[in-house]
Image (cartoon, rainbow, N blue to C red; front, side):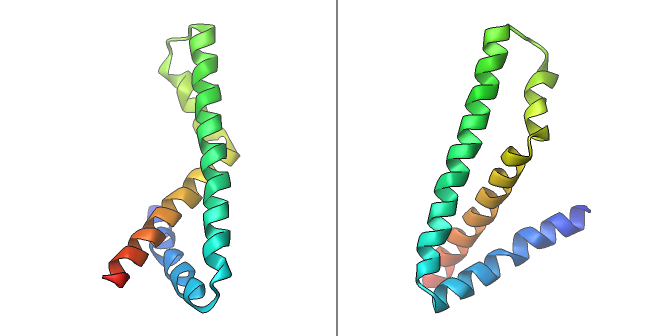
Length: 94
């Protein structure tokens, strides 16, 4: 499973890069998805931390429950892939 996750993180940004070269509107779409993912990711984190502070919970397992939220995981995964895609853009332009 670990090898699969690493391979996916390497292989998905490559088609993103080449598809964007062929269709310029994908640049806007990728950025729009990134905007939504960042909002979802950040709001889930802030709400979770606020709830822990409000409840005065000191157990670290409470904050780790955030990893069970599928929206958090999907948004975080896309943000990770998008960062690699942007690094690929910058690297191949120079």
